[in-house]
Length: 261
Image (cartoon, rainbow, N blue to C red):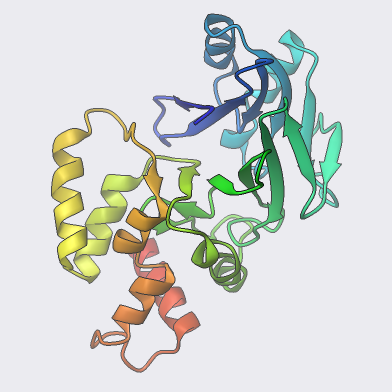
């Protein structure tokens, strides 16, 4: 996978990502947090940065923009209609717009409101067959969880984003989230549902992870551990606490429980 995962060693446990073409080294940077460290990665790997893409406007997903645009000639890409969210945007995109990363990969932009109204999710596609290889989910879908809706978000929109995008992805698609909350999210999931999958993967990851989760998870794994996805929501309909709830109500109740947990 042509992706460098940059963990930022901050209290919010942010991930940034560099997507590159192995032939031309043309690179897109997603949600830069520490621009200096991103530049070190660029220099070490002889990459040619051309784009910054911000999934949303929260400070921890844009604060590296200025350092990098001062260092390189970069386009800063954001969702059309939200140009006032922050300074420095040079190119806007609509849902379904495509961006070529050299001649090997294509990025496709998807509206994914919920955590914020202006949130973007990004598909990584193979340029030869257009199959989706990965999704950069920002703060909509996390490993074993979803984003909160406390700072400009809407839980009903987040539910629709999960149903329309994440519930539809193939099992093989790799998820690259905006933060590493895996262990905490698994502990929350276990507090709600002590399924074998959740307990097994929590134990395994607790033993493996030293500082952060270095192994991106597939949608197949997410469907085993993420209570907010369709498979687990269906199972929760047999749970006493959720038995009388419709699908969206289960999602909202889970988000409320996670907010208080």
